[in-house]
View (cartoon, rainbow, N blue to C red):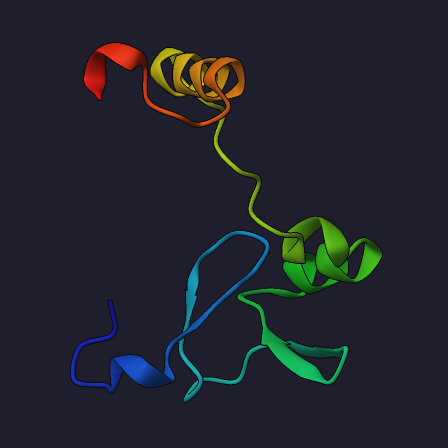
Length: 86
């Protein structure tokens, strides 16, 4: 962490997820009207080759057994509670 500096002004390298201090001269790249800051030229080049790899949406987590069971139950009952619960 950068001691004594405002944490709002700390950037994260999208390739290696390293914290980048904006007070120090680091490589930058503007992509789709947004400026990204990198810890090194190698990270900037990697990002430049395939930026969507690093900016894609977060994949939803896989459903666990209980969530799959509830999905099947809702599908079987049409979302209505079982007759024993009424």
